[in-house]
Length: 241
Image (cartoon, rainbow, N blue to C red):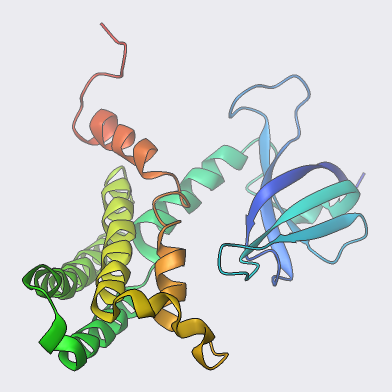
């Protein structure tokens, strides 16, 4: 009729502990395999039959959640691009996520500024290696900003995001990790206790812990390197003759 009935379970659902809506790929064609027969459907997380189970991370906060679907009824109008077209929607979404929209240049530039301020406050005890890491972090954020502007200009001119999105994803995820690592080095071992000093959340400690997941979400960096090798550099697939 006018509804889809969804049953199943998903473990890593980003921000599902807090969100009102979600989206997913659901198999709508019986007997289909791999990326065929999938549809992209939006759903209200407060719908009857949906159970959320928040998963606490290392620092105790629930950044994501497991979702359980027990015959959840979703209006057919919540499907994007038509039945069986879900993989195309997901790949377009992933391209924007990796190459343009998930991590804004302004966010990283603000982090780099805080890192420089932290370095100035702790310069007397900073090693040459830490000073180099701070410098590289600031330069990296500028390069990332210029590259993002270039991608945005390409899209405005009618272009599309291609395999180069994988290059961008590796760059920003490793940049995020290196910036937060440099901050932890500047603050020393006491940085790990700062969260508990006055009951407040240590922004650098939280940032560092979260940055460790960067090479995993939005497509693991190992997979992104395979995409770059095959689609961007034209290298043969592993095992190909």
